[in-house]
Image (cartoon, rainbow, N blue to C red):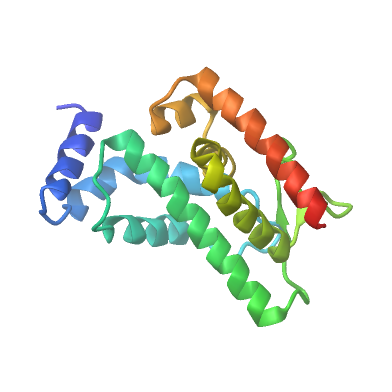
Length: 194
């Protein structure tokens, strides 16, 4: 049995009401989740507040605790993992923002390809900016759910166009169009609130 089919089998077992076998599932996905977490944490500046292993484990715990999700396979699991990692990073940014009210908060960088907010001279975003990006992304999801999911996969999880297409079960050209439209809309929205 291939790794992909084993992951799918374990996720389908979880759908049928069985507890997911974490001891079997985590080793099959760990390398991919760790790679995804490294891409997410690349956006944190000099003093990351979260280690890669911590992000993987925190996101994974949120994933296996999902009782309302009907897993459709490995790709679906990875797309939901991207969303979980987004939530972890945003929650950490909110916590830092609340704790310090912006004073001395290590800024987060935003990839140049997204470029949706006013960046400081080093091209970095503050915790407030990442929180604003999250709120703006939620507004985007109200009328363009695919675009919002593409941004989650591309920005928060660092997935490629092809990986995003696989995770969202659509074509790479659909991902490219959604990515282009979502970036444009986010840029306008965040520029107008700055």
